[in-house]
Image (tube, rainbow, N blue to C red; front, top):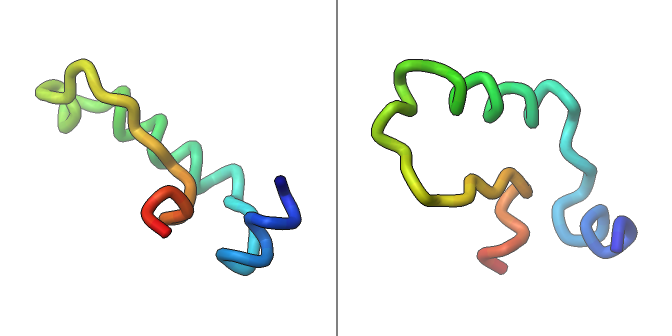
Amino acid sequence: MIDWIIATYGRLGKPEEIADAVLWLCSLQATYMNGHGLIVDGGITIK
């Protein structure tokens, strides 16, 4: 699985990229976000 991700996108996500999404979800800017999964995958799921 990891080989497929690297071949498709070129690299794995960095921990700080995941942390940025988590921090946003915990912020007041995400208060209207409800009932949706935030997928942080570098766009793999749209290919």
